[in-house]
Length: 475
Length: 116
Image (tube, rainbow over all chains, first blue to last red):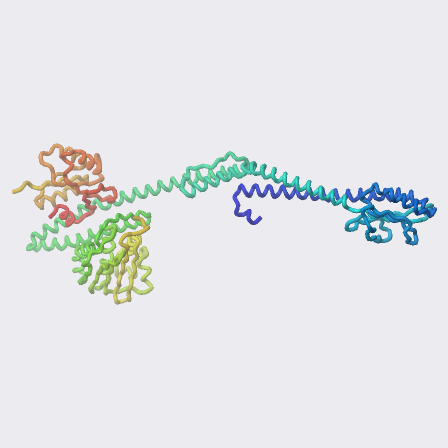
């Protein structure tokens, strides 16, 4: 029964129906055999009692006339009844008067003693019966008859054979029947299972199960299909919503960046013009104002890019476009670009990125990572020196950015990589609190890791460990 | 004195066209403006001297940058003119072998592309 639990539906149905029908069949056959045994035994007793009655009637005279020869002759007529093994005629004082022993037996079988009042009893291998020979109301002798049970045993064997035969035949017939009939139940369910598997494997909500089956199975199919229809429409809604969001993101990106373009270029163009008139005090004033505007436009651009990155990352649209590139060269490029920022913060920069560190990465995303780490180092570096290093190992490259500024407390070191997190108070340092989160997303999408070592007041070392080529991850 | 270098600006935003023209002219270059791909094609087909470079926006009315690029490549007279995409959209839809200046870009990036 336990093995049923893991078996297929077809097997279960066939096994269950065979189990049920064979149990019923066995019970019926057993009842039949028991009934037969009981009736056969009653018939045996009846038949032996009849013989006893006839013999008693025929031996009355020999007993009265003390004619043992005539009595023995009467008893020997029992030869015609092969089941009767032994008959003895006993006088009331217990002396044997006449007896009959079946010809195949040498010695009389052991005599069973019947309790007073019991006229017949089934022994292990024999039926024992006594009958009084009565003349004018007086018991003049007693007959003791013993009959063997061979006939009964043969009959029971025959019954068992027949029962076994019937059982085998009906089990075979039952198996054939249920193997055919189970399809009516199992096939619609298996169809349902196949449909469910398609939905779950291929996320295809357009499949439908057959609803042709009658009763609960058909109802199950119908309900399943209704569920699928709901899922299908929800899936379509979801896809539409995602498509709408993607479209909005793309439009928002375009709309926010477009006005920044002439703004940025005009500011820089005016800067160049003002510098050309460097001797003029008015031009100098304008130039310093334009410097501020330039920095603010850059800041606004960064903010717009950050917000768009957040949307892309949260909607799992951070797509990397890896190419063969040199991380050391990129680091040098970012450092050159940040020269003014470094100067303003009064930070000295020590760069050790002289040997090429080649890998297959997304250039603009790694640019973002380096820029972010460097501007954090400048922001929290308290004007102390900053060290950047690029170290290539076999199949990995490590980028280290170290500052000697305010540092990060132990309890904040995990938190700073989370979204909208910062280790410092918002009142002292601005920012969206998204930079390191984006950095971590990019590094992880590239198959790498980022970690930080820091002591408060001792500065911080951020280490980015990148495989030269991301394996398994999105490429 | 050599012939002045001509740069064509194809962008639907007049402020961007004006700004780029100002910068280019300050650098001694000559600028031609077109508000969309069709206008640019018409100008090019009618021009006696072709530009040395085309700064091409992607999202534009009438004819967008991608269609313009296809038409340009299909015209043997125009196919050789180098194109730099200036776009605020993603860079994934950009044809291979074309320079990209993602908007907003800095003047240094523009100078680098122009080779100055």
